[in-house]
Image 1: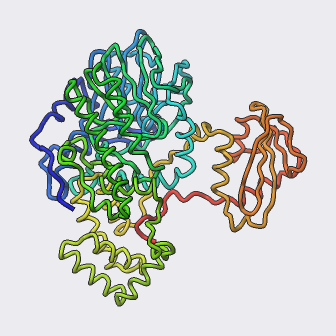
Image 2 (image 1 turned 90 degrees about the vertical axis):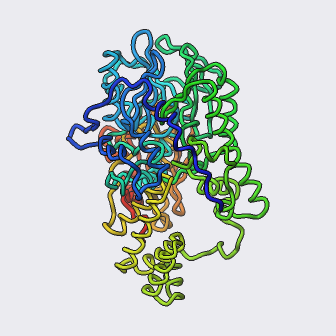
Image 3 (image 1 turned 180 degrees about the vertical axis):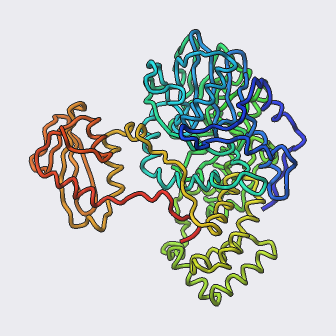
Length: 608
């Protein structure tokens, strides 16, 4: 593959834009929880003010310098952003009586600090409405930091499908996603020129408490017009783009367009490395084109849920058009080449962007990468199988590794061969051989140390933040052992947001199938406040369900519970049956619970 066309590193427009409208910073730039634990420390990135070292890619170093700028900024009169106090931005729009908060960051503590910084400079205005642009946790998790318990009710707006996707993503596969996010964001790496310097989208995620306040108003169509505290907002619904439920909006009175996370100053992910459903690059490009047509000639500034604003008609058109063309090109060219018989990994080596797109700073692979995005598009259409029957029934990693190492003459010989490839500069294949050595003999200290060294070299050369963090976290696991996952996303309010069907699904995915093969049981949940009965059946290791509206229990249930939704939540959280009406054998619940697997929040990733 031809080397990337370098962007113009002499262009300082981004730095001027990132500083524009600065009103003041949090000092010191540290946020703590009630117990004194530090959940955010942007001052740890002060080293970025120095020149780029040999241990970092100049492009990622530049991007991290921009993303680490923290404080309150005026976008236009009445519209403000707090940036650099979490992975995402908080936007605040002043209304007649108070302020409308948009995207309250990742954690309660960070959001509270951001709101306090705004009030320090703009007065103690009450929060009069809350908007979630999309269903990822860094855009709603800090809701209780701006609307604490006991706050007067205010409108909470979100795109159609928000609650379903916000809850399911963080519960169904949330444990594994959250674990991999530790590696993607490098949250357990030391901050410094040789360690974690950012992730391209921001610096990292805060590690405070996560909450969710249910939306009260759904945005269901493009063109929907709402007025919040005297502020008129016109929405563009963009489902299936950067998130399954997402929306852009324009503030016509301010001539400001918010692009949520659909247009930022980086190539984004078609499939994020922490894990998610594959996004639709074709649809993403189409919605960006729609944004350009609907709003491109009627706004003076574009803001987003990450990074800094873009001012000026020409610059706005360039940003939206170049990002549109980016996602359209990588989608269409991947399809062109897969229809010529190339596999995902082959296309990733073959494909490059047109120079005009490649040189554009906002299209660089600081967060997403062309390599893994191409593979994601291939996966969306073709799945995991590349058509080669040799790949149809391969051994799992440890078994395959032992066989490769045997063919190479043992672990010592494999490590020696890998060293030759590393010395020759082929770090990719050196990592492959050393990975086999570690999986064949996890206790082989030389294999572990050599693989860690290769990962560090690969990480230090990455322009992509998540790639760098994965490599460096991999090296840390090999050298130091497992780093714990600092936060859990599936908190009580997220769990409470699940529908009853989703609650049952969250149990079903924990049933240990083999242990449950020979167990048959039925339970009815009769929810008086929902006026429905859910009929659960465990058979052949599968927990299935359906619901009926008439409220009558089935005739053959082993146990029928008559209760309310809050009582069900308490029961599933480990509460007692006190006060819950039941008919049948309560031991059935203990049987079911005994068949549920626990969740491993700290599983190994680069070692078996």
